[in-house]
Length: 151
Image (cartoon, rainbow, N blue to C red):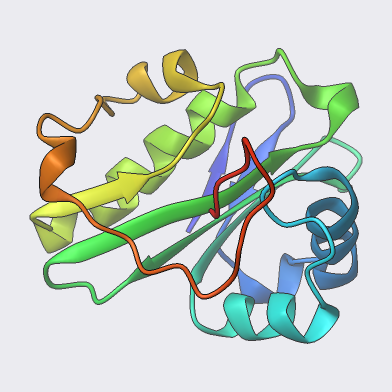
């Protein structure tokens, strides 16, 4: 899938256009939920996901997100990252909408995501707070620093 915007940005799920080195650098050094994530872990997560990459008019990758799904009942939208120079241009909302639209044919019962500070970005694409958070549970394999949640 490839979608273009009038301002030159292009979103693609083509794995050949994904810069895994760049994604690893972004996640492991600048994304609070993935600091220190190994290259091997990023590679494995990419292999097991539907990946969304945004490129600018010059062809440079400027954003990333992935979705883990069984394509039948559930999806997890995660690892959303927009390069600092491209923030504030609606790319996060555009990605969330593309994820929503990409998953629509599967009629999934639930698509979840976790965010600490971008609720309004995802709300524009139709995401809402979990209505009954007491219904959700988590199994953490490692201890997260205070104030940080796994994504």
